[in-house]
Length: 243
Image 1 (spheres, helix red, strand yellow):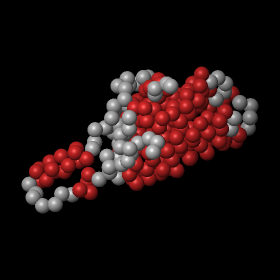
Image 2 (image 1 turned 30 degrees about the horizontal axis):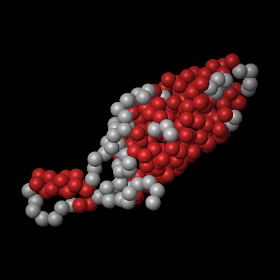
Image 3 (image 1 turned 90 degrees about the horizontal axis):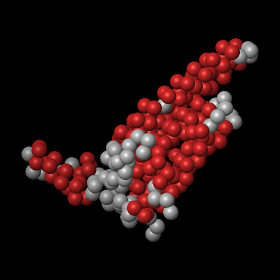
């Protein structure tokens, strides 16, 4: 069985720190709370709300990312048709697989490496599918490569410093997105179609670039907010993996 090979293949393009885990646990929460009291000089009750694990927010904000950022991209890809529909379906599968994993994360303590491998299996398989588009050819090759390379950001779950990794992926998007916009402008110039039809094609390309970029930026913001030091397992949760 391959041990996180696919995810690490993506991650190695930008960061080779390997797996690391957030050491946040009940003992750390108590220590932080004590420091907060000592710093303020207070001798009364501790504001425990600050140190609670907010599972509902972690999942809820990911769901909002899917609704507000990923769905518009999928709609833009479907509007272009052809291979864009197929790759958009893979994008949806990848985000769903990661959402399912995050549901387990928010309900569980840090798992063993073996259980983690099982949890990452579906995401890993979909990212492998997406990687095949990196060698795409044809009129929409840049579109496909943009998405395939950008979706490597979902490998953040295997990294010690995921914010650095996702930031680098997001910063690399113009390599393909700028080319897409230039190609769209060139097609319009060379095309014998009517101006109105050419403009419609350009708008679809622009919408795809914009919505995908926003989806990746939304993912970066999410990781920064909830998983800046790696996956935030629930210190009060059940044992991860099969019951």
